Length: 557
Image: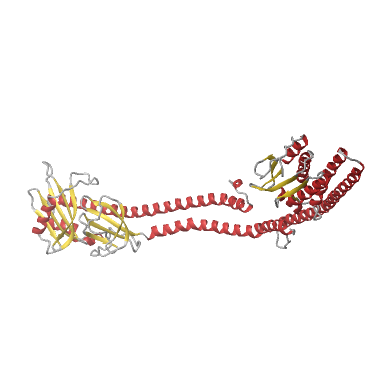
């Protein structure tokens, strides 16, 4: 993956990320696991608290039930009702009344309140007897019972109903015990707890029997009416006072009484805050390290590398390519810079030597071309002087040779007209060649003229065969000896092409092309054409575009 990036900065940052990402992932996993463990611990602690209330309530209920079984057994055995009532009701705080009815025996009533008379208690006993009862597993007998919250004498009270069906050897009985809800205060006392924690004993109809942490009449901490899911153990809901609270519900004394506990979610919020801190703090530290790493790398590495790159680019454009040394440079970067500057100095020295060698070679080449031009002029003069000693065909042969040598001399003269080699302008060159042909090759009554204009130019190695082609073909036409005016038409054609053609002022039989002419045409990469007007004696076209430009570029270099 690191190899996919081509810069040092990208590679180092990628390497850092390859280390930081796994560390961040491990940190995130640890934070998530810790958060889940904390939430599970909080939920278990809350559920255990509710379970403690249920256990204490069950113990109290079993104790009361066993006491009722003993009292009923004593009364049916003939014990004093007064003594049993005082022992089980009168001496216990919150126990208000006791009613025992034996099968066929007398009714035993003990009441500490005037409002709880025999008629009221008998009516309530009959009402409880008509409701569903259960058999407690903690009592090893056939006694069934139920635990309920009812309104007696204008107040809500707890009632414990128990009965035993009669047998031949054991008479049956029914017992009703009335207890004030305040008697459960000791049962619900688990020590000082969270001030936002509330636990209560409520009925299936959501009536509060006894509460700890809130007054009995304050039910604002309970969820809205009708949203009490007695089949669920834990849920989150909005209380009547508008707070989001956590609720637990467990059956306390089946089938109609439940323990409900409510907790604020402050502990879960604290666990969530701890989770965010454990998650974000390492990630923020890694991000800070990344920023510091990138800044240090930019300051102590990338900055100097870019300086070397800028010096290299500056040398390409301005010729000066030194990287300035700084006392703040790391030692290894300084070594690279020193080596780079030394390399630049060596390259500049080598380039200077090459420039001097090129200048010397250029001077030699220019001198060579000048000497070639001068020697051609000497040869031309020699031929011109030599032909005066001859006549007839020999003189004409020497004139043709002089004319061809003049083509070479004129091409080099045009190429060196500015002191340096450059493309030869076609029109002046052919005008000079035409003039020499008219002077050297035309017989009496013959003449040759140039017609047309062009701004094109050819390098000297193409201008020479062009001039020789004109000389060879014109010589073949004029050799017929007829009195005529030979015209050479030149002009620019489409597509960067140049055209030339021959015509005469009277009908002339076109000469057959010689092998020399064909070789010259092939050397020029020319082709016959009909685009040149009045060219009945032969016309050719050749591509010129690019030759002059290449020659100019060569001069510039």
